[in-house]
Amino acid sequence: MTVTARAQERLGRPELAGLVDELERRFGDGDVPASIAMRDLPGSARRALADLLGSDRLPRVDARVRIDRLLDALALSSVAELKDAVEALRGPMPDRRAQRVAERSARESLWQWLEGEAALLALPAGRPLAGWVERQRLAGARGGLEVHRRRLQRALAVLRALPADGLPLAALAADHAGDPHALDHGRSVAAIVLDAVATATGSARPADAEGARLLWETVGVVPDPLSSTVLSLGLPGGAATPLDRWLAAAAGASEPVVLSLANLRRWPLPALPAGAAVFVFENPSLIAAATAGGWSGPPLVCSSGRPSVAVVTLLRQLGAGGASLYQHADFDPTGLAITGWLAERAGTVPWRMTGGDYLGALAASVSPATLSDPPPATPWDPALAGALEHHGVAVFEEAIRHSLLEEAAESLLGPGPGHYRSEPEHSSPPAAVQGR
Image (cartoon, rainbow, N blue to C red; front, top):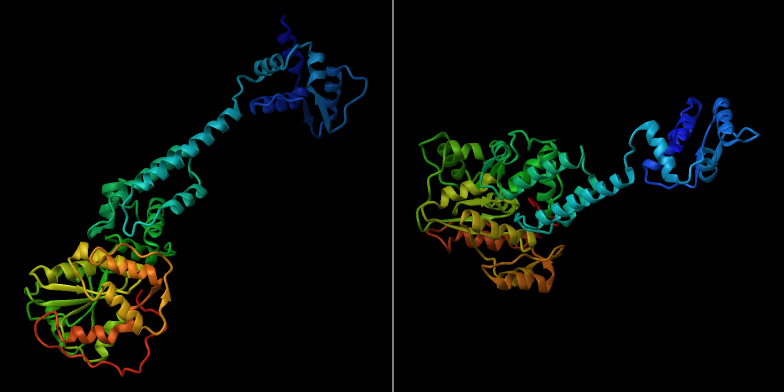
């Protein structure tokens, strides 16, 4: 019988199972222990351990066994031989330390891969996604590395397809995540995608289904054609469809209307003729002011902050015949981003959105606000971004609402006179920005 076989036989007594268990654990962790701690030893184990070690007294209930003494008792010359004896009793032991090192390496590789993929995404507003990657890292690889990698791959496939152009949410999910319900509210892939969109656009991460719907809309995705809406005033009507008749009555009464994307798809509005003008504002408060003044000027459309799919659809319908779509927004990073986005997506023309317009608005503003982010590029007038960056303050539409509405009412950029009765000049602009 070999030395290892004799050691195996002696260690194989049932009363020494606790000792062998601890040896297996320490060897499996990659340790080369100098001693082994034993806890709560029953009397039989204490007697067996004393017999093994040749001790004339029983070890304590909580005992520490030195490895060198154990090797002497078993007539073994090295820890490697002791490990062989334990493996002969329990089978091959995994190298858990090497496994942990490999797992850490695989996790780090996953996050490095995600960081590289995130850098290639071209989402609206384009803010860096480092914070998104870090949040994903902190959340961990739920379900295991391979499961989570596949989850992230689906999320990235969706993000690469953004911004969409009026695509239904279920179609986006089916085309790029392989499941029409993968982007439903509460699903893990949807949460990952929306977190990235919120980071890129500087928006708050959605806390509920309504917040998720609004965030999807900012990247051109339609969760529900009934909830995607656009506020307008003075849209021309007619008698051809129920929507035409409603618009005619609302325009005659200077009453604003809220149209859903479903309305616009069922009853598309006829294009306005070349030479006609539509004025697009960012904030609903300007539509409210125009309504209070008895508006009878050209059509007004409100983007209500970041434009919904319904906003883009309406503007495309109105401008399809060559009408000019003049657009204004707040002089802040969000307003400038909206201006560039609408010009690209809906063919709008930035109106009173130059560096000189900003300086004039700044002079007229009662309490401009400090910019929280650097302004984006303004290719229609590079001086505008430079002026905002130099002064570091925002000016909101409400501060210059009277001059904007008066100029639109006079239709200086379009045919025919309009009407707008401004509020008294001494009235102060709202302290808080509405519709942002």
